[in-house]
Length: 192
Image 1 (tube, rainbow, N blue to C red):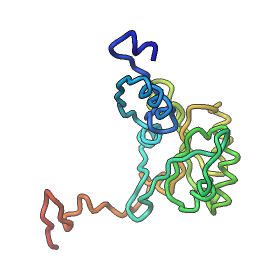
Image 2: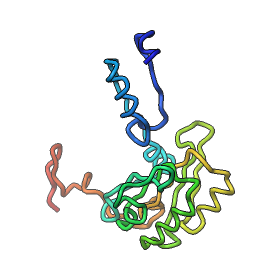
Image 3: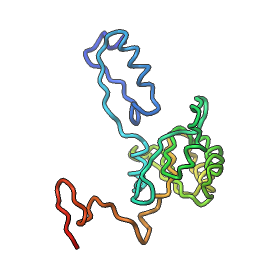
């Protein structure tokens, strides 16, 4: 507020997207009270940056079409019905923010939701940071030790998904987006 009164443009830069796990609303409310105009520029979420770093898709036809962005409960409690164990019961893609120091709890919650020890996990530390990004792949059973060995204890996205590793799968169900027998706005279907 002090700087906005002094300068025509002030930038508050946040890593990731300001709408996810930031203090956007509390900052905006304070500025609104002072009638200071604002604009929000979207950022790249670490969930998307991590999937790109790992060359992974968060969704695949007939595997999962749902992505849950959440975190393990820590100092800030989770609302009723949003525990990781409850959300993980969907067995879709889970992108866990702010949870790397809670991997033991993450494992417990996922096991409680029926995930198996061999479920693939991707952890990306400092996603999209040139020269600092680290990619760790493992399973639900061994990812904690692999992260410890790499000294990953902050700024990491955890992705647990049935889609991980699909690049090496011998067969995939293809999207209908490019299927020539599927009509859309730009193309008429070809009958076979």
